[in-house]
Every structure is written in structure tokens, then in C-alpha cells.
Amino acid sequence: MLKLNAFLAGLLFGVGLLLAGMANPTKVLAFLDVAGAWDPSLALVMVGAIAIAIGPLTWARRQRRSVLGNPMQLPARKELDRRLVGGSLLFGVGWGIAGICPGPAVTILLTGHWQAIVFVLAMLAGMGIFTLLETRRNP
Amino acid sequence: MNVDWLNFTPWSSLAGGALIGLAASLFVVGNGRIAGISGLIGSLLQRNREGASEKALFILGLLVAPLLWGLFKALPPIEFQSGWSGLILAGLLVGLGTRYGSGCTSGHGVCGISRLSPRSMLATACFMLSGFLTVFVLRHLTGV
Image (cartoon, rainbow over all chains, first blue to last red):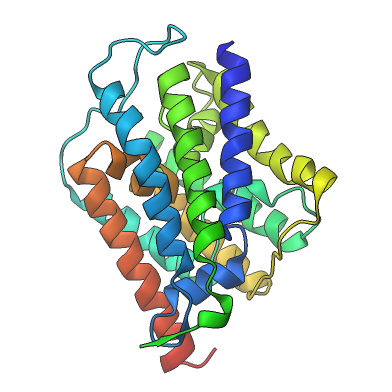
């Protein structure tokens, strides 16, 4: 059940990204281009997502186990540090260059666009560099 | 401000967002996990054994989504604006940045804000800001 639920959640997430327009880099860049011909649609993606998710996530914060029996694993970190800010700023620059963030990148990987494959390989490399730097810092 | 009403898709974006929220809810309520894509991929890359099959199946669901969609109707437009160098640079920055920042649009922007996490609110403000600024610089200052 845990595995089936995980697969269905991923599937639904991908369908949501496609329907929302998040999987179209041109639309994402039009959303980020507030000084140009601005397409505000994607602000509504976040509104819709949070409106639905806020109830279940609030519930989850008070649980020790999930409905299917997994331990509830919510992030415990609280600190507002330089890594969080620096990393997020860096991510935003990459997002602004190509209009692709990790969820849509994976979702469009098998749609036959070479650009998606190049982007995902570079993204995996970026994550690999992070792991490399981290293991060097804390061997 | 000049809104592009022709390309404004409030209903499909709102409905798509609702599906994303539903998916994130399903994952946290059922599996007790945050549907943060960069975190899930990062964990799989680091060979973290904990929940690896559940995480991989969530990712598989994402990969299958457009194939399933394609069985019923034509895929929505997927149009790129960048060439090789832009895609590689952007991918590297997205990979590195989301790992240092512990999340991306899904983990911080949707799940984090929904659980009222100050860290996620700050992270979301940061990547939105640098996203807006990057597009501004590239499109209106340097004319690339």
C-alpha cells in the first residue's frame, strides 16, 4: 500500500504540474518576467496547492505515524541560516535562466525533448557536486 | 505592469495547483513524507536506503504522468527558451542550490508553506526574488 500510494501521489503530482502549466518553461519564464508581458497564472498554482495541502499538513504535524503506518517524517530544522538563503538564491537564478525547477524537469524527462534530458543531467551533476563537497566537509 | 491576459490561464493553473496539493497531501498522510522533488532525488542519489523504494516510486509516478496523459489527450505545450549552455548552467545551479537550500518549489513552496515553516517561507521568498531578478536582468538589461 505504501508503494502504491507513493506511485499514485507522484502520478497525480505530475498531472497537476502538466495541467497547471508549470511543465512549460516558456510559461514559467513569462510568470517570472514581471517587467515584460507578465503571465500571473502560476501564482494561482501555489494558491490552489496550498489551499488543499494546508489542512492535511497541519494534521500531519500532530501525528507520530502516517495513516499507512510510516513514522511521520517532517523536517525538524528551524534555523534560518546562510545555507538556506544562499542555496535558495542560487536555485532561483537557475530557475530564472531556463524556467525549469526539479518537479517539472522530471515530469517532462520522457516527453521526447532533448532539452529536458540535458537539464536533468546537469541538475543531477549539481546535486552530485553538493554531495561531494559535503562529504569533504564532514568525512 | 503589463499583464498578458491572452496567455492567462487562471482555471487550469488553479486546478493543476489543487491536484499538486492533493498529491502532496496523499504522500504526507499516507507515507508520512514531504513531496519535495529535489529532496527525494537527492536522497536517492546519496543512496539513502530509508524509504528508497517509496521515494523512487513517487519519482516514477512523475515520469509516467505525461505518458498516461498522452493516452487520453495531447500534451500541453512544452517550449524551451534556452540552448545547451543555458540548460547546463541552469541545471547545475538548480541542482546545487536546491540541495544547499534543502528544497525547491515543491518542498518549500508548497509543502513547507502549507506547514507554516518559517524556513520554507524564507527559502520561497529567496528563490522567487532571485528568479524574478534573473529574468529581469536577462530579458531587460542584457537583452539575451
